Image (cartoon, rainbow, N blue to C red; front, side, top):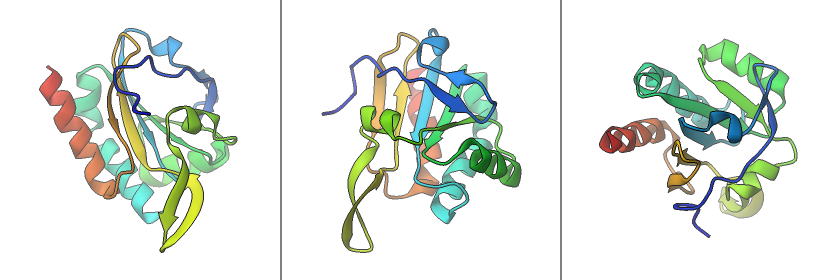
Length: 155
């Protein structure tokens, strides 16, 4: 079921900054939440670095960027250090947030069906409503630019 136009599902997850994060604490701000399978893997690294490279323009627009995977906070810390990522990564070990955002489920990898994280992104508006959802992203490296293009069109 598409999330666009619906209230963003709330969550409470630990971030790479050792703080708890939820939708409520970002009320009044636009959030980009991107879901990715695993720290320090080729596609996930390209996607994270794309958001890093667009980070100044995103923050100039008042946008908060959050990355989410089931990796541990320790793994996130290494990923952030390795690639100088300027945004918080959230740890969702039980995949509850990913399930709420339709970012966990059946997918095809190497021709086989498996359960796992589905690379996807949502934009949540300042009012807490999901404005845009990209499901099942095929080209991780292009996603940050697609999100930025979308956000430019909102202003």
